[in-house]
Length: 573
Image: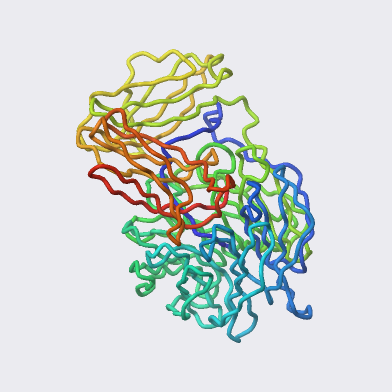
């Protein structure tokens, strides 16, 4: 099941291991480990629930035969891929569970959908205490047969809102948050028949959140384009395989346009629909999964910087299928991984043991447990490239990166290539390969003012293997954008990268981060020193020294002649 909004962004600073092999890297996970939950776990979500910087689990337990109350199980992580004993909190007939800061106190809260049959369902909200425990459940009535749940700011007020598909009314409910843990009236928008899964993303490039809904009995996915105020236009339907159950959004072919991955329960496939960037999607391409696929997530699971698919299978004990992506919207044949039991409805992805590799958690509906699979990708000798970035200046563009000592020992040289689009074509900017050094810089002065460029590194190894690092993008200087340029979580380090631009070499100002209630959680003074783009890192820690809760924040920079604000969404890692 899709339990949190997907995102697609360009990261300007990378710290990653690039495989030496030129072909698709293998995907691999260690043996599964099971941890006890409540009965019939239906869904799982991952976030740091107690503020110790380690990922924890929230599991919705949906045993309709069990005397009420039913529960959400919370399992606190040890940071090494293990989890402590469950603690249960009341949530009747829990189905989907999602994690976000719903009341702007910088502590993660839980939103849970529940309901069976055609009766009106419930939304349960459990406000977090910040220590892994939660307060009493607050319930409100929503649509008939709520199944999945996604959280995002749907009306631009920096407060988290909800989207919930309703199985028995053929609608998706939108509930606008008040920022205090409560939600407004249930507003429903038409979908296809028997909607199961929902995902949120900007599907038409207008910077407003849209909805994608998998319709189980219609064999379609409905796309509802958002107006930016919490309302949505009429659905547009696109054909999938039979019995679609879940949908995920991501750029699967590197064209910077969001695509869809949809699990098809009956033929045991996943449909990939490539987006045109305007809210439309092409004909489906189907790829085989395990028997009875339900939940799907998108992430780079084999450390090759290309998006892959993880699918929870219901009818086989090889409960998770991973489909390695080729980077062009196609996928290799599935690789199946044992989880000890069948009945998989939900799969979630996060780095559970702090090794910078995405791990998997599957909820085992037929058994009171979750299965954890730790990622072992990248076993080949890596070329370690870190801090790859491109920054503009009045004189051109500077591309910076660092090479680990091990990399320098077996690299013959490095070329820099440039393109006008992330997909290329790339042209070589270096005449001769640059000699490997710990800290490296290439300056490109042949640039047009105001144009965006993409840069990548071609790594020439002593054994003849060629690998690629990047790309990263930047807009050239001279006509620099004053103020905040980019704000995003780093992909590989636990911080936020904030890039600002100025044409004034003497610029001085203040940079601050505010939560959704307008409270300052971090601030610093900035000094440019030179015209161009400059990058600041925030370690996501608040005044207490602990990492702030996941949720929606605003970043503001003020200085002489400049006031600039950007939205920041902190997602679970």
